[in-house]
Image (cartoon, rainbow, N blue to C red; front, side, top):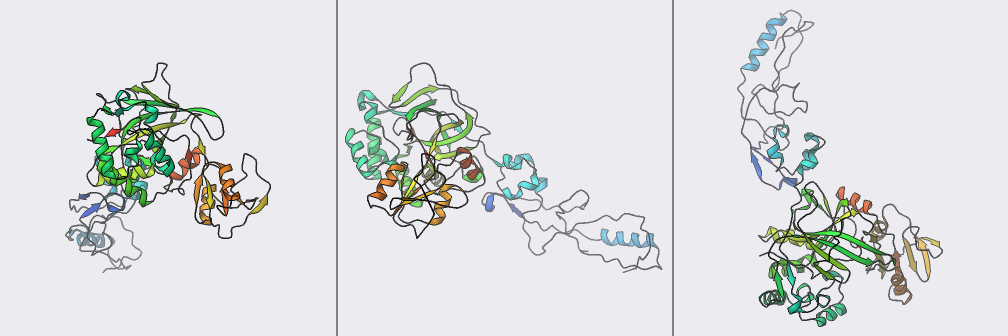
Length: 474
């Protein structure tokens, strides 16, 4: 090459970008988190790259001249050398570019961004990119399947708590209340029994389906474990289950495979959502109608309504029902309906409370804390109780996270502090971990950063009632 030492270059040189990582051609760019969604076919285009306009240095053209070394020389004409250099570059015949999964993201249009799910690209798409990735919450009115009390009997004999809080003794009690109690469906001896009962009850008029799709406004009057009466409001809807990485519905607790396998077998058999799941959203308390409720049992009152808050840009947080939500996702993945029965509860209301779930352990692996006097109602932190003594535990994070890291053995759960202490005093467990409940903001923070809390970290009281409304999927 000619030397251009000490010469002033008066003519600009057009730069051509050269694609990195030769030999790794990828004529498709995968989209979706972990490249799990559909692929976008890319048309091969070769054009000059203006470095001043492409600050990220994304190279989309590969040229036969991949590098030009310019050596200084004082005896040549500078302008002639520049002319020759330009001719060398222009003689390069562009070949199809080497495209990588990260290349060309800035060129995608808004229509395609609606399908994009790869959050790794969010920084390159601007500060609002993550919001654009989220699918809108698909919330709809639904035609409910409900008990006809004239045929089935009083509603109080037909409803029950959710399946996962019913003990074997309680199950037997609910089954004995009525041959039509919802526990015959939610906790059957066999999934085929539940499918047969649901079919027979619908045909025999025990359950009747409403004619028109509506929302239902729910008000639950209750007295909490702290003895204070409250009312919690929510809206009962149909909800389409979306994978967590869509950012529409967020979990906050770990789940286990066993319960989901059983729930999936039941869902396949009955093809109906028998119980509602409980979700939170950032909103104000709902106004309760002054007229008589259309449906009621115990502390639950429900009114039909055609109106619901706008959930199009709202994230939902699962408060209770993680296993059932993930079961609905699995059912949809194998071709079933993705619809759920959901109660959406606004967070800005005095009636929304979280109580602690204390841990009772058969073994604590030699854990020690600082001895303290018996705490009053407000705990100073996570407290270990054993052999009549209280010890304050140290650690970073929420109380449930501190105890989870200690890995106690043979753990059971109770929302009642006095019951946890009594179990230890009877000698039925080595120790109890007494915990403070997390706040609503704590739960949201964990979910929004993509983490999950240990199982049974939150106790939203009261539980939703099963059997008031059923969502058939046929």
